[in-house]
Image (cartoon, rainbow, N blue to C red; front, side, top):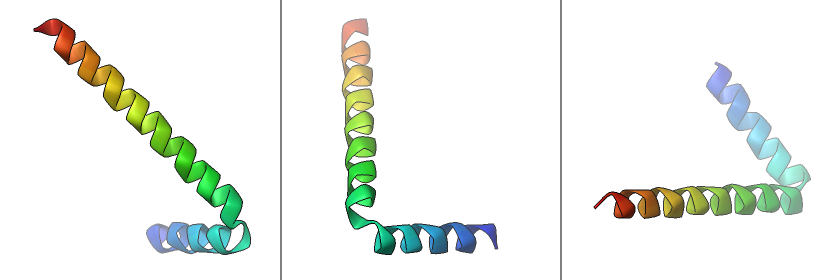
Length: 47
């Protein structure tokens, strides 16, 4: 039930504010990419 509510909210938000939604996704993607790069550098420095 809670999952469907969350999905409905996300769909509503994307429809109402697509530019803001895109910015949020872009920022989250950059953060994940930075975290992956940092983790790769850390693991590489262990070897």
